[in-house]
Length: 508
Image (cartoon, rainbow, N blue to C red; front, side, top):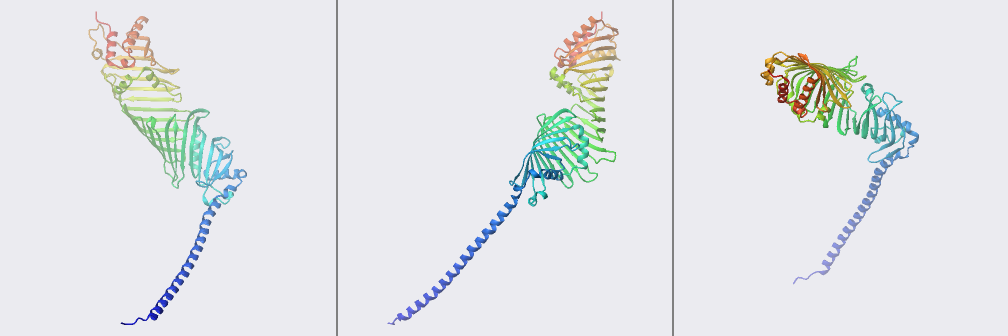
């Protein structure tokens, strides 16, 4: 048996342990050194991170220490410089860091663009947003956008011409927002309407400025969008929407010439009424050079003039190729007398002249073929200077008179002449036979009450002038036969035939 050398093995174990211990000690020292370096770096990083966070906060907080009470004039001047608005600060000024650097102004007065001595509006709160790099000094501060909240604006529509010129030639501004504001519209000193809960967005661009107004007009939503192009000879574009009236208009205006003449085009849609117009605009005068207008009732063309100053007035020629009276009479039959009366209640601002031509009239009776008329609109009244009705083979009729508004009760004071060219056709048309004499031309004058749907006759001539008793008889028969159920029976050709039969004396 081989003898084991224990001393040799023991020496080997001690030697191995010494080597491993030295290695472990070296690794331990290395680990300790790395840990100290790690802790040191972490502290440095903490200082750096704190510096990065604290310095911007300190910078953003600088405007808190500005003396705004002594700097109102400086801020007013900067508002004019950045937004082209002359203003007066009546309330307190404060600074808010969040959500972005901004100055908040209470009770800001905006001066009128045309007359700086007058106020255009009052703003409860104005917010002026400040660029980050402009916070260090109030003397060097400027603003990159403006927000106006809870504003009350008074706008005189008589100044629209001057406003238009000012905005086209002088107005240069950064972005503006208006919220929860009211715009009152005036015609001089006369109040017209208010656009409530108005929101306005003005965006300044390099090629065009765009303004969008949304609000409530007569408690209904309205939207107006305007794009003002800055390039020479580029057109301006308007878009107006009034959904409750089913109204939409798209307007394109060319650049004005040296005489302030502007060419324009407008496409509009109003409750199934469609129109396209080419016009010239000079100040407040619009000349319609060519226009087509159509809906389910008529189709035609329109030309003429519309003047907005010093008061609204028009002189138009409306030439209709067709007019569907069948459809209109069907609608009128379903309406009450009061509703039809209210259709003729006009605004006192509607004044002007209308020449109306209708080439083809579609009726159930096929009685009226065409129409030609001259009509005036004067202070709620409608004056019919002439209305010629082509009755085809039957003959013709002409009507003059006035549709007069008295306390919103409409009365038509009229004079009518009926000319019968073909007596035999007249009797055949109305189913009248065995009469003692031929029908004669007729003259009638009287008054028709739209509110009550009643007629009263003043004069009736058919060959001879009828006496008062005969006139009362025809008046009574007309009211009982043709106005028994208001416009429902008035527009019924069968009822008209019955009246003609009663009015025609029998053969002896």
